[in-house]
Structures are given as C-alpha cells and as structure tokens.
Amino acid sequence: MDPWTGKVFTHIYDPGEPELIEYARGALLRNYDKTMLDFTVYPSIVFYETDLARFLLGIFKGGENSVGSFTYGGTESIMLAAKSAREYFKKKAGDATPEIVLPETAHPAFRKSAEYLGMRTNIVRANRETWTVDPADIDSAIGKNTAMVVVSTPNYPYGTVDPVEEVASTTRDKDVWLHVDACLGGMILPFLREKDPEIPRVGFDVEGVYSISVDMHKFGYAPKGSSMILYRDKHLRLGQLYVNASWPGYPLVNQAVLSTRSAGTLAAAWTIARLLGYEGYSRMAEKIYKARRTIEEGINNTGSLYVIGKPKAGTLAFTSDKKNIFHLGRLLKKKGWILQSQPGNRHLGYPPSLHMTISPVHAEGPADKFVEDLAMLVDEAEEWNWQLVESIIQQLGLGQGHDREAAALMGRMVKEQLVSGGGEGEGLDLVNLLIYWLEPDKVEELLKIAVNEIFS
Ligand SMILES: Cc1ncc(COP(=O)(O)O)c(C=O)c1O
Image (cartoon, rainbow, N blue to C red; front, side):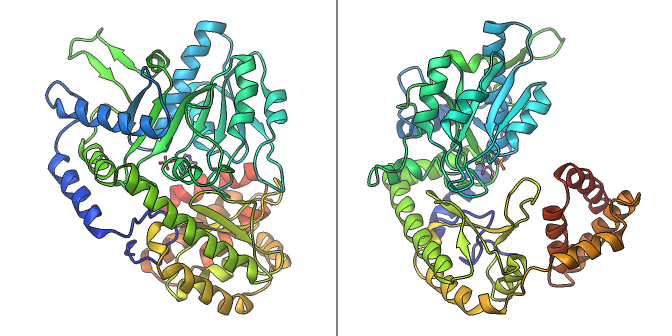
C-alpha cells in the first residue's frame, strides 16, 4: 500500500509537501551507515542531537538547563523517562518498588516500560464523557511509592488531552515526577494554543513537568525511528544513561536503549525540523485543525455516528451505537480510504471505534471528499450483530478448553488473508469483534498465540 496518497488515515503523517520528504530521504541515505554508538567517530551526531533538542526545547519552553535525547520512537522515549524517574525515586525512597500512576487511556508503552523496568502500575479511570482523567482521581492514586505520574497530550485512542496544569498542581504539592506524553500532539498543540487559549499548556512552562516525550516520526514528519525525550533539568537525565567500563572492550556509553543505531533518522529528523522551523510547524498545525474540524462535523452530521470526546490535536475516533463500524471501515476501504479499527472492550467500557490520524495533506480536498463518501456509505453499513459474535465464540470452542487451537487457527486465517491478499478483511473484522467481546486478559493470551502463528 502506498501511504502517500492522501487517502490514508493511519500510521502516516503527510505534510503534503513532497519536496520536504525528499530532503529527509537524502539526509537519511547519507547517514544510514553512520552509527550513533560512537559520537567520537561521528561528531556530527552531537551537533544534530543537541541542535534538534534545542529546537524542541524552544517549542516546549525549556530553560537553560533543559536537555533532550534522540530515541528511535515514542516507546523508547517513554521507557527512558520511566527509567530516569525510577532512579530519581530510588535516591529518595530506597528499595521500595516504584509505581507509575497513569490514565487508562495512556499509551501501553508505560505499562510495557513498567514490566521491563520492574515497576508497578496504578491505572486511573478516565471520565466517560470527556475521556480525560480527573485530577482528583490522580491525586488519590498517588501514594508513597509513586515514582511517576503520566498525562497524555493527547492520548492515542481518542485524541483527548488530559488536564496538564491541574494534574501538575497535585504532583507539585506531592513532589512527584510528572511526565507529559506529547508523542502524538507535541508538534501540534503548542502552535494551536497560540490562537486558542482553551488548548492547555503542555511544556515546561507548567511548573512540575519533569519530562516530555515527543515523536518526530509522527507530526514531526520525520522518518519512522525518530523521537525525543526532553527533561526540565540536566540532572534528571542521569538515570537514563547506561555506562559500563568494567569489561575489556570500549567504554560502553548509551544514552538510549539500543547501542548501535543508524544516524539516518536523526539526520533526517534534524533536516525536516530545521527546514520547517517554528513557522512551518505552525502552518502544518493550522491545516490539521482545519481538516479535523471538517471531518469531525461530517461524522457528527451523519446522525448515526459520533466522535468520542473532544479531540484537540490531529487524531480522533468515532463510533456508533447502531452501525457496525468495522463493516463501515471496509466499505470505506473499497473507496480507497484507510482507517484504523479500534476494537475497544465491553468489559472495560471502551466502545469499538474507527480511528483517524489527520495530516496536513488532508486539508485541501481529501477531508471534504472523505466526508462526502462517509455520508453516502453510512446507511449501507450493517448493524451490530452480537448474537453472531457469541455463536462464533461457541463454534471456535473459546472458553471450552480449545483456546490455543482457536487462537492458532485465527492466526493462520489472518495470515492467509494478509499474505494472499484474499478476502476483504472479514477475518480482521472478526478478530476485532472478539477482542471487544472477550475479557482483556483472555484477549492478550490469545493474541500472543495468534501472532506467534502469523510469524511462523
Ligand atoms: C500518545 C502516544 N504515546 C506513545 C506512543 C508510542 O510511540 P511509538 O509507536 O513510536 O513507540 C504512541 C504511538 O502511537 C502514542 O500515540
């Protein structure tokens, strides 16, 4: 699939300026064979990384002592922030097991980091109208072992923004590390805020924010494999670094999780950032805002579909009480529109939805055309049929001692469709319906088996 068609609303962040992407590709190619492991061999790495950090710290209102490190993605930025917070906590609290307090809507990278780093998580429920966390709930979740509190600006599932300033006033009072996950909205919200004071501040100008993750490979328009982790103060980053001088080889000095990394994505991210500059990102943010408003209104005007919460950056999700939105997704695909299915989960109270990542390229033309097609197709979509889902669960023998075989069978079925290109995605629809219907623990167990099968 070509992601640069203007019809794709998932996993692609298209500025709509092909020459920009060409420059980035050039920088990527010129640096693909240089390693970030040894900046004494390639000193330009120090320049690219610190200059990119300086650019971002300008956007996020960092101070003189603020710093940033380049990573290969949001997950890595988050993991490093969690490691830094863990080390910071240990200095204060000794051997207690540190805990991350996070909204249920926060990216799973925080739960994954906790698993990797031997930390605990304390998940806070989001308000079901706004799909943001209530600061009072964060306040009551903070305990003596809280090493880090997380807010998302915005979260991935719904694009809604947690109340950073209100949560910061709580964490400040309790002297707890606050991390702002701006992976998705960091290159949009600070620019939109200049015109709309309702957009919350997400930077270090909010007293109490210790670290911020921001992905260059999302709305920074850089190639996949580029993100930054920013710290209010240089000393907070010390816990992130891994150094080993106790083996016979070169002194190992790692600022990130990986050792050898191509410098290609760093050089490309720097190139795009410096070419676009503050003005360029501001222009992009306005285009995204325009396209998102058109799409939001178009969805809500259909009558049977509605946008979940109040998205504020470049993503949104919509659902329907009546229409099977996965079937609608397939109808849209036939017209060339690619959206992402979000199964949700009935046990957790998350609705099934279609997720859209809206890029600047959608502002001129595609957003209007999409709304037109959506209005035309919505009546054709089937209605939910949960009885059918229950009977399929019976047929597969799920919950009757046949879970492993059923999961492996599903894995093979999906693989068949993916590899042969056969079918119209009904297999994936079924998987999404099952994910919505079953207990999340069961889903996780089954998915591992299915994915193991897909990659066999
Ligand atoms: C809000 C948010 N945080 C973190 C991540 C993780 O980023 P990555 O996939 O680059 O590891 C994502 C990815 O979509 C995200 O949307």
